[in-house]
Length: 122
Image 1 (cartoon, rainbow, N blue to C red):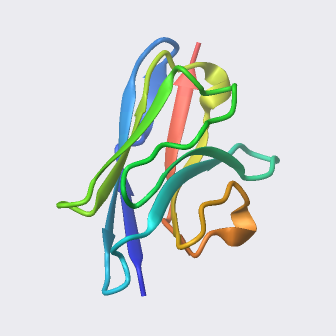
Image 2: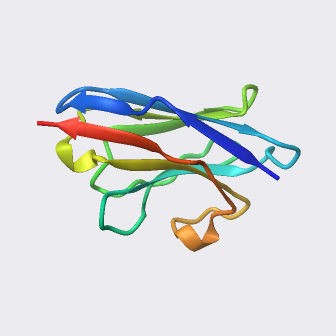
């Protein structure tokens, strides 16, 4: 079993920055691809960013590309999402994800965090 614990969400104004953290634990937490998804009210959960277990970064959707950066510290078993130039459209619950499969599909995610709320006001 893998446990994912998120932190760093909160309230921000447009243009601000937030840094989300996700700490992974459990015997199977090593060599997992990690990522972030988000879900706005009434909408489907969507892919945000992903990073392989060895540190390779996948392409993010245009909605966040250039503003959001994913990174990981394997020594700490922690993945981060640095969010810059936040927009009201970024308001959503952000979920940390882990999987043996590198995928943008929610169905392929093996483990989920509990989610952390990010609210961006104008």
